[in-house]
Amino acid sequence: MNIPGSDSPPERDPLQTPDVRTLTHQYAEFSFRTVVESITDYAVFMLDREGRVVTWNAGAQRIKGYRADEIIGRHFSCFYPPDAIAAGRPARALAEAAAHGRFEDEGWRVRKDGSLFCASVTISAVYDDAKNLRGFIKITRDMTERRRLEELEASTRRLSVFIAMLAHELRNQLAPLRNSIGVLQSLPAVDAAFEACRNAADRQLAQLTRLVDDLLDIGRITAGKIELDSRPVAVRDIVCRAAEGIEPLLAARAQSIHIDLPTEPVVLQGDEIRLIQVLHNLLDNASKFSPTGGRIDVDARLDGRAVVIRVSDQGVGITPRALESIFDLFVQEGQASPHTVGGFGLGLAICRSFVELHGGTITAHSDGLGRGATFVVRLPIRRASPESIASPRVGAAGPASPLRIIVVDDNRDAADTLEILLRVKGHAPHAAYDARHALALAQEHVPHLMLLDLSMPDVDGFALLRALRSIDALRRTRFVAVSGLAQLSDRLRTARAGFDDHLVKPVEMATLDALLQRVARDLLPEA
Image 1 (cartoon, one colour):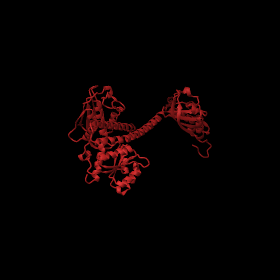
Image 2 (cartoon, one colour):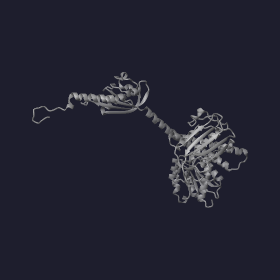
Image 3 (cartoon, helix red, strand yellow):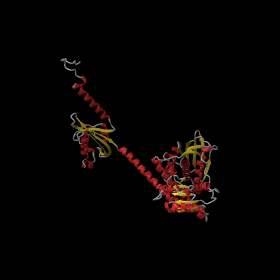
């Protein structure tokens, strides 16, 4: 104890003696060195004031490829590409770290074997107690994998945008073809040759439309952007609508389909359109790999809290090896019948994605080549009251009175062919190719229905809708978007904008007829 006024020297703090301070400093250095040397995810090493390597850790050896005895004493500029060295980047990095205490950079660096890698680099200046520069600590992180993933994600986004644009443009071009075939289907057949060609064109256009849809779906699947419009839906409706959609193809191949469904209602919670697409793809696949005159069987049965739907054919079968990859992208197994057209090998991959999004599973079974194949879809079911299920669509009948309709599309072929089709169906249509003409026709004719393309130049469908909604005489007019954009988000956008409905190009005849019937029922008292 130090007593004031005494002659005894003051007591010294035992923790502040030179020996203890040295020991503490050495222990801190040892602990730091131990931690640094154990790090493998980062290259952590020291440089002297001139930039020569003076320490090396395990992470540095893993990332850069040098052993400590190979690199210590060498200048750190050896980690830079030749062009960066020529540009003086290593010297600038040290100068900035010395001036500001820290330097950060991200760019390409060179390993011992000469390979390049993307690195995130931090250089921190180290000073002694007198504030003199002693050297630098350099920390390097290998960012190659992260950059690769970022580039892959960016590439996937670009691909998705491209596929969406491609599908949109293809749908726009398919629209006048679908309209023209609809006109031919509405006219009496002149002879057998006319009818055969008309039906063939219809089938091929349906197949082309499905290929475009598959291409777009794969783009969404790979980007993780599939949207489900989930609601109660009856299994019977899914199976029957898929079978109806495939019937023209089966008829062309003289094939038959036999359906066995439960007598009691079975209800799923799911996206009706997507589930119909799954079964349609399976039926199309069964038809494609079955001979002329072949039989396809579809049956559904309850299995606990799930429904099991089986699609079986007596076609070419699948090899055991192919069963392992049958649901992968771009995989096509077997030799299709001569009368079929090929695809991209997307249909089964799409089926698997859609089924799994619904919490289900899909499997394939075959006893081998020539023994046919069976695809089994298992989906969870739910209890639902009959009134919670959407009513089946009612077939369209001819109009009691013609509807006044204005078709607006800058694609003249699409507008003109749809106008002709509507006229053949007994209505009173007019075509406009731009917003100005559409507004004039609307005020002149006060239509019951306006079909608006969304992607017109100058004034698009959304701006045109706002202008039309402001006209009091059109307060009862139904406004329907017609577009090649078909995602749920696209439909929600048009609904929020004030459209009464959304049709996807090319518009199927059944869809168009159902719309016309609804509008006639709502606006024509005699309908």
